[in-house]
Image 1: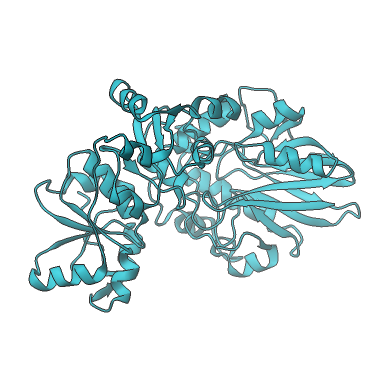
Image 2 (image 1 turned 90 degrees about the vertical axis):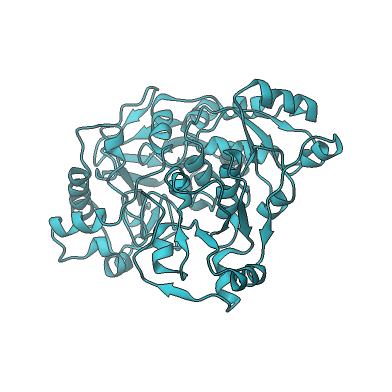
Length: 474
């Protein structure tokens, strides 16, 4: 037997590769499927099943391409009704994979079709549970997403189903099985997920608040729903792509990898409604960029922030990327359903500079420079664009909270004629915030290099802890 967790950090997502006797099952694959195919070739094995734990909201699965390229059967649990051929597994059904058995456990709650897969070895021992978004390490899946697709489901109803699923289907399993979830810390599919990507059921029963043995259903519903913020707008759109189908990743890559000269790029920008997305490092971007482009760095939490900041997954995109990374960026956009990259700037931003095209820039100051400015003028306006929960935990005294994840509300409360100094935790989100607002005519925003981390470590700024956020949200 071979069992491998394939974890993708930028999405905080875990896919799984299971092999026995030359047969392979892939659980919750990413959009780009070639790595799974190559892995099976190296093992001289055939991919027999693509097992989906549910219709994912935070990424587009690779189930369709993988099935088309390998002949594998797509499997969903009960209540799934996608627009393509699949096997609808019954609760308790056993799927054979070589000498292994994979038992289907229908666990509604996160969504109504949510299903876990219990791995049983050839000796009949329960080995592992692939828990999807039903059970995370330290948390459980949020029960407020399926209602976006089916209006008669409330989050309270779903949370009640989740309570029953956990206690009747999962907590009754062997304590020594290993829990392999679909996500870890950083995913918007839960709120208290651990950085660990696997754990025993025994330890989860001891440490996961949602598995407390003496918790009533009412207490569970209250605890699970407490503190939930609105999910990213692209979530229901990704769900529909996973249900209805999508273009092959090969077609998306072909469409996007269209190299454009500076002149052609400028023409496309002027004649289409395409958004110019610059994925270079934030500080590199600040020194010079194409006017009206927005910065979401490829080396940060790229895909989730693209999903949060670009509301239309069918938005045409023109790409500015580090040379040689264009295909990577297009692939990572496609992971969250942004399939309409129509071209990229050939030879990157350097080509734009050499062509003598118009360039814009963003001022970026360090903590020491801001301290000097503040010493001369105590009324300077500083914006903290971290999440409200981060701000509430600790922030620079007197600073206002303008969360990036609610950028439209934050923008509505900012005076275009005022100068603001903007920071996040480390400098990634502040550049996203400033670039988007600058493209909308806000020309007096200055970035604080290094963010809250540098401000705090400089020792020049007083911090406040655990206060109610003074947000700019109206």
